[in-house]
Image (cartoon, rainbow, N blue to C red):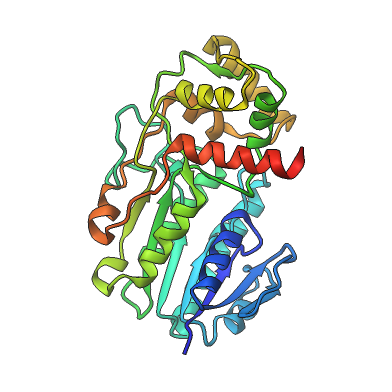
Length: 319
């Protein structure tokens, strides 16, 4: 009998990619989200649901073999909503999974919870330094997961770095628009710090590797990152070169660039938050050696390939 997988946040960027992959592998998928699903496929059932509703979550987890918990209120949401969705919602899912004897539970966290360390590469043993409501909620979510370990349901925590690919826009739309209209891309500082972008297909493959892994290697915490760590300048210049207008990356002094980005974030002029610009400025290089050794997983695409794949999708879809 085909295993049944519950994906929270199934209408989102990752959730959509994950459900397509699982359906191709002949899994049955139950997707839940506050946003209506556009997917209609054999083996897929969608329920519009709020994970803060404990009784509803309890009903939906009955008969489920695996939960992939990707639903989250993002940094631009109000603080109260971030904590109610990301903390209470996670708690409801964990309790219901254990009560209903779900075999495996995968929690999608983020490497954002490391903050902005000075030393690289970042491993799973680095201290967690949450800097806003979103990252604090993810740290609490991880703590909840660890608290429920050993109670019947195997629980795994994944910390992916920034991921893109076909289907993702948000703050990347502005970046893509600069490239496609023949404008330069400004970066804060010299752009000489390492930075990584994971392709969504590699995140999906890592989750599937966990689903298929043995018990002893499942219940753990793993970073996810691409195999390379180019500088932020190299990544942005590759995008401009790909666009074909001969434009160059331009540096903006931090004394000017950081206050400007802070104003843009606070006013909501663009869909961007602190992590987006500070990680590019300070660098973010994460080691995925642990999951590589445990599950023989490695990313198939590098950072530049991931960004260009997302750009090409955008050009074909919207121009």
